[in-house]
Length: 457
Image 1 (tube, helix red, strand yellow):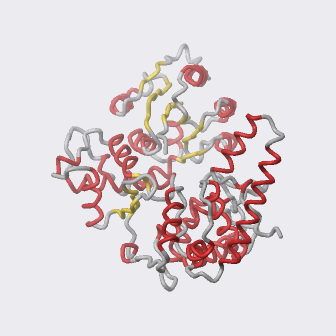
Image 2 (cartoon, one colour):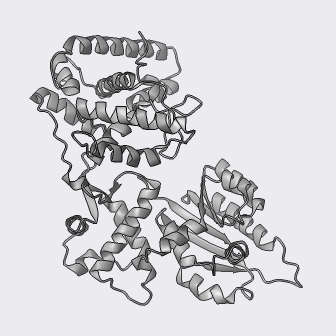
């Protein structure tokens, strides 16, 4: 995943006054910056205010690399001066710094809503940050994401290691492991699935630039992660597609769960490895069946209670449920199945379009058995789109059911998929070349538009 480049703009009077007014104490810029460093690389940080009035904040802002934009009061007539200066700088940066893709607006003032909307028009992601009592609902709902300062304060009770480091240049080893856990927890808030090891280290270095695993006699970051796994701090999973490891927080008993995949023929194993290379792990028939049924039950229960479903929360819910099944299913296999459902387009927005974000609310309109049919067809479509001839129905039956009893059904599905593709190609031949190319890309990437409807026929 591409690293985010952040610009942080602070309406300091608004945020500082808000924390004191709501009894939250003095504004703690360090905690806020640590949270934002989990989002990406911070390139620009500017705070706007009359620093004669806020002189006691200067040292902490300087330590966090914040540029203090001076807006001295003139005969008490300083209303909106900081707001206008912030907006002017934001628009200048948006038009001159194309590499900044995320803007963090630290204020709760509704006057900034037009700025947020304009930044979004320029295809910039906007994160708001403010206190609950001082934040306008209009502003909060205009942002792509809004972080409440109170939630950041709650994390202070955990006493993260980076908050204790002031003059030290070397972390004790126990604090290095604590930094690893803190950084990983922050990343998992935004991406609720195992994180690439490289991203974890980047997050750690943003918080503590002097971190170096070699100081603890580890030859590389992978050895450091393996030591953390031995200490039951994290769990590591091989990244079959990109190589290396993905990392998540260690869960009690999770390490003891070992998925046992039924034996399949060598020809079926080749097809399974091909799907894994394409970024889709089919797991096994039993695992898919269990995860899909648990997912449908969970989503139905939440919908009945009028609660929102999004993958950000569903991943962990289904993992907990599948740890209690017989046999239990690992978190990695749960993710493989749910990710395949997302890619296949079966998880829908309320407007009927497939979701593309883990934060998006989704609904399920089919029953579990129809979803399993859809999933099998999705795997076959991925193989067809990659150029596989699919001339061995028994191997495909072994791949999808772990037996050869469904070879005839496989042949029927392949015939239908090829007919649908042929019809699409004939339709495309009447289109301008540019549109034809775009459509082929969508179909190759697993777009829902090319995925067969399991209810058809």
